[in-house]
Image (cartoon, rainbow, N blue to C red):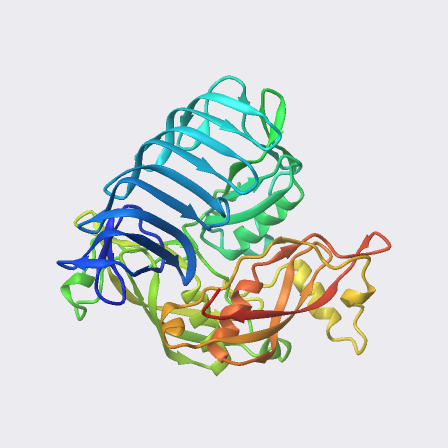
Length: 462
């Protein structure tokens, strides 16, 4: 993504060499001619979450010379890098340390550990040689291996639509081969994400090795979803207008439309689903040049809950932005979705979900509480909900009490609200929880369906 300038609440600008979704900054130092100036610490937030802190000397909004970068994201949480900066980009000799004892000392080029360097792990494993984009590439280093025992099947619920799809995620694999901090980088339909995460959960993972010693390292996994029957193969699940409306301002007149990056689930309101109520909703959305939906407005819906569900789904998604003159561009358009358990690609229910739904029809469904299980369900993939900056800026906070079912495969089914301080936050929480996956809950070692209740908190400190 192209570099950009970003302003704090006082209009003081900082240079962002790698813009991220929903970025905001905090700066308490001097501002000269509208740009950060002098010594100080610049804090970066993505979607309201503190991700980076840069300390050093700023000149015309850019960090120059010796400085310190602290990271608070999933993969590098708590790491500290002391390095030379050129226009806010790490470039030169530096040292990066992690709380678990890992340490890298060597070259940085254009923001990444690239060139000659040495890395030491907590178990005293050591690699010294060439790095590229943060990874050792010479003899003596073996990258993480992820072996999925069975071929990942194309989701049955999407066969009739024949859409193609791509799933890409990064994760941290510990020296004991446990997978954590999964971050989905691309998934153009929630069913593709669900299938890929489920496969990762059952994968045989071999940790990275440094001269035979296992170490904790980052890994990537990519899956392509294409039907083998060419007569059923079609295009991407969702597409957007090839041309912008002529009524929009010039800055919205793109040459190429946006493309889905990560599509968040569309939650079917459980009470309406159980009543077999079908419906639809339509929203207007504004996508910024970073590919983030910064405004989602409800235009129409056949039931209020359908409208809130669609708003939350779009607000929780991300896009590859529209392009104009080969540069990222603003875009605005409408999105319509249908709610139907059989006839809608967006809300079609998989086989396991249908089995759980049928159980809920019983007066005493064979679905077990946490207290009845062998142990509390163990999380595998639990992404946080989106917290739109406009809500945080308005001081909108609250807790949502969510109940959901974990099927015997470990997949979350039918999240719904028991109590919420704010309806918009409630639907954002449900959208996130619907992506969650656990290791299968068991009783006497046998997988079972379970019901779980969790609070999801939205507050300005986290």
